[in-house]
Image (cartoon, rainbow, N blue to C red; front, top):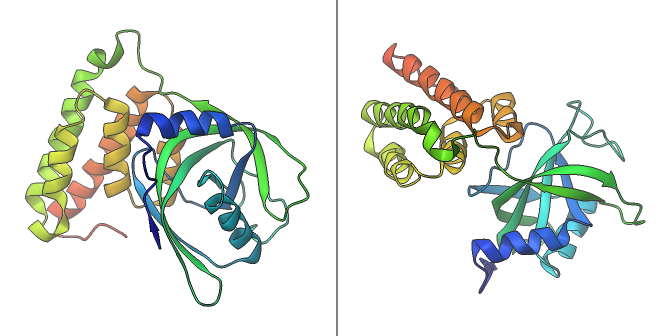
Length: 234
């Protein structure tokens, strides 16, 4: 097993992603959102994606996870994909005895799929555009109210959940991202938002103000369920 990407900072990985944007390996799935800065595990078993994984591990360790336009088309040779995907780096990998892989990835950025490349390989590659967060005219400072609202929701959630839930650690981590509202929304969404369609909406929302609103609404819904004595759906 190899762990992490030695000697590469977040800035270096972002630069590496920019270099790879001309031909980025794409792993199509349904309802999976790899959000920037957050970890996502994968179990790779299908032969074409084992080959994709091998190529990534012997190369730059980068790939993008793209959502299917239609569920149930995973086995199609070239299913239609949604335009915005989550690019990530493989931080940890384990090759199992039967050739399957267990991976731990970390999101790097949102990317837009621009053009599929004809490579002759069994997996897909795309030319992509690396996307930046869209802040309002006043910048991050203009989102102070939205950031405070989300922080308060996370604190309330932590007060309702047992210590072993990790909610207190989430609240602490969220407080450290107050000046990075896009990253704050992504962190909380990765930890709290469980419904697939909602996670994809967060992934596809480039406007940070709207993303904060979406995540705050989702956390508030979980708080409401807990306050009524119900468990949030997994």
